[in-house]
Each structure stands twice: as C-alpha cells, then as structure tokens.
View 1 (cartoon, rainbow, N blue to C red):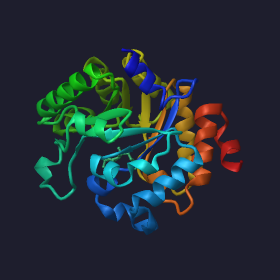
View 2 (view 1 turned 90 degrees about the horizontal axis):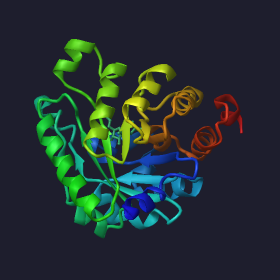
View 3 (view 1 turned 60 degrees about the vertical axis):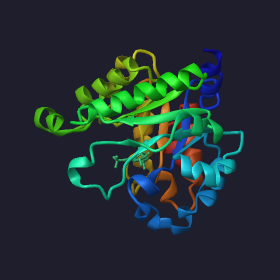
Length: 272
Ligand code: FBP
C-alpha cells in the first residue's frame, strides 16, 4: 500500500539503504549492556546523540517510546518492536520472544514501522510465527511496514549446521521472513560477502539489514563487515552496542553513514 511505501521511506534514503540505531538491550540483555557508558542507560541522552549524528532510524520497545520517543526527531524513523524476552528466563525458555504490546499501541506512540522477532528453528517457532502473522496482518491493513528480526536459533540448527551463523541457516531465516510478509529483514552476519549475497538473494527483494552484534574493539573491524554487507547487496545495518557502548558514538555513526550511503572504503571512512 501507499502507506507502507511512504513509511519505509522514513528509514531508507533514496539509495535504498539505512542505518538504524537499536536500543532494546535494557530489556533483552539487561542494563549491564549500558555499563561501559552508564549515561546511555538514559534513553534521552543516547537517542539525542545518535539522532544528531545522523542515523536514519531508531528502534526501541514500547515503554522506551513512551519515555523518550519524542527525542527521535522527524529526521529519523521510529521503529517500535513489539516482542522481547529477558535474559532472566530459564534457559529452556530463552528461545521464545513474547509480545509486550499491540500494533495499535505502537501506532499511538508514533511508530513509522513495527518490528517483531522470530527465532526460526526454535521449539517455540510456531508461537512466534503466529505472533508475527497477527502483527503483520494488523499493521499492513493500517498501512504500516513490518520488520522481522529473523534470528534462526535452536537445538536442531546447532546439531545439523554447527552454528546459527552458517549461511544456509541465515538465508533460510531470511527467506522465511520474506515468505511471512516482512517488509524489512534484520539478520546475522554470515562471515563473507559471497555468503551474505546469497542471504540477500534468498530474501527475494525484501531489504536485508545486518544485525550489529557485540562491540568490536577496533571500529575498523566492524566497518569492514558493514562494507561487505553493502557490497553483497545488503540494505544497511541495525546497530546497538557498537554505537552506545562508545562514550562518543558520533565518529562511529559518521563512518557507518559513509560506508552505507557513500560506498566509502572502510579505512577512509574510519579516518574521516
Ligand atoms: P546489537 O547491534 O547490539 O547486536 O543489537 C542488535 C540486537 O538485535 C538488539 O536489538 C537485541 O537486543 C540484541 O541484538 C539481541 O542479541 P542476542 O539475541 O544475540 O543476544
């Protein structure tokens, strides 16, 4: 629909790419993720910094949107994720994301896009699949794009492929996300440009963004990965720790923008 296309443009620049800041870690990992730079536990502080530095979008859970959604100025899209889990759950239940709020809540909070996670391959895959289907159906009806964090993980994956980052697993998740109606997909790095290009192909035209991962000590290492993602046809990155675990996130954001939007060589981008 026109609404979906218009709202997707709030995240993607004309080149079809986006840098999105992720900040659901206080819930998903716990506030310890903010300990490296404790002032960033205050959502307004970090959101102001990243928006000023030029990110294209910000992703958060509904409660943080209530507290600090207005700090996301109109220069950036607001993505509200409706599912999560805490790290406090028993291990057997870590493979499930539960729904925290409704599509209507996210819309009332000003969301431009609605996100939800599916752990493909989880023993609870069915629950997340249905959750996603319901969210997508409502959101699409109302003209809102839906983002799937397509994260394959589960015992069978480990048994058969050894790790969840195996490209056959990641591209399976991306394909499943596309087939379940996602308008944007966020997934893991597969380790090489060639394999990530297959993930992009498997998504059949639905934009695929990299999920940042743990903070790289050397920023250049992370910029190189993002550069390969772009070379592979990826549509950008959704980045949390590599941004908020730096006291001054601006140089990293500026460098990421150069790599994502200007195809700049990571070494050059890091120097600028
Ligand atoms: P990072 O860039 O910090 O990896 O953030 C991306 C993200 O998907 C967050 O949105 C989420 O909280 C976290 O990673 C989940 O990571 P995992 O499930 O691998 O612990």
